[in-house]
Length: 526
Image (cartoon, rainbow, N blue to C red):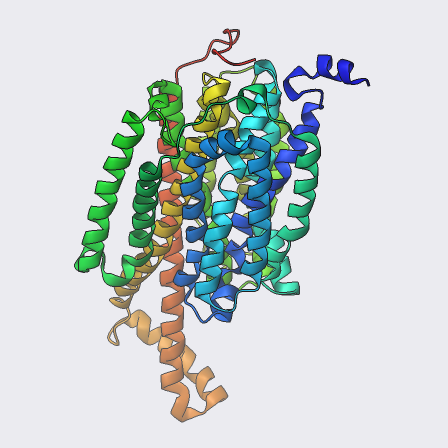
């Protein structure tokens, strides 16, 4: 095909087949999202290797998400200042190099520092990829484009635990980060070959960088994460420094909002919030981020810490979510252009909520296949959520505002995910303590049930360990069972709260304004 013919056939991508552009930008996006989830199943191993608690190991996830969220809204300015293609190549390179240092980290402090750099490098990958894809297709073809994008955003988090578990058990948790290196190199080659900047990016006039706005963004997001991660350990507002951190968070957030609203040349243009669909989309993506990352983090932990599964076994059990997402993505790509997306969104959230309720029915006797159906349906439901949500949120946004919009959109998802992970791990500890206290009230020496259980176990313990050790061993076994039951009930609580959150989202979907099927494209869309 000649250059002129290619330009005529694919004018939006300067003669490059848009699906080649899609593959090029999807590769780093898939890698970045996969990395967020791939470490979740390796957390107990990271904690053990680096002499940290499981709660401290979750900082490996949350520190990444926060650094990611800080860069997201600034990605539009950097793309216009340095060129979208060049900035994308820089981000992929930073992400790939920092992945090596994450894998080679000798201590928790080093891996957290490397994860912050990695999160900063990966922060712009999703909004850049999303805006490039949306601009590479006509408005009528965007549902199929977002379905392809959804394969990366939805499938990567659900395949991550399986791959991470296999790498951890077969080699080491460090290979969960090393695997990014060959993928990153391939992504750099493809982006350099197939991605081009549109004319409005090449000739864009970019003002000075908003140092104040960016600094305020760093302050409030950092304070938010520190409070969420450390608050449980110091009894929240019982610690003076937590009060100061919350005060700094509130002041910095208010000033950032004011700065972003009054400064047209800032890194974020909040006037885009005047769009009702965009406002609704930001609310829902934040809540969706909480739902997704709570499930991604908590379910593998349940199988490992309560059920005693290996990392690979836990990842394999939750892996069928990826199958559900793969099946759901092309289905939603077809239905998205034929049905009211609000109905699809509502169905997706309701399906996710029902699956979370099914997770809330777990007990200590479940087998690997017990939750196969709800786990698979969760992936299918997520496909029905993400694709219509991204489409409805950006359908009225012009190309010139697309970078700003996708930056905010992805920032809210990451912040929601970070808040969700921190809240879930905090509540797992608190609810386990609460259930342990409640269950202990029924295990008094005078309780008939306690006496029957002790008399039933004592002969076996005496036979195995001797008469002198029978009673303390019996008490130890009963206490161990108490801890198991308390942890189980804590996980059940988290799953049920996640279901409630999903049902709330299903109702909030109807805040979207229905988009006429044959409406003219918004200004700037071509």
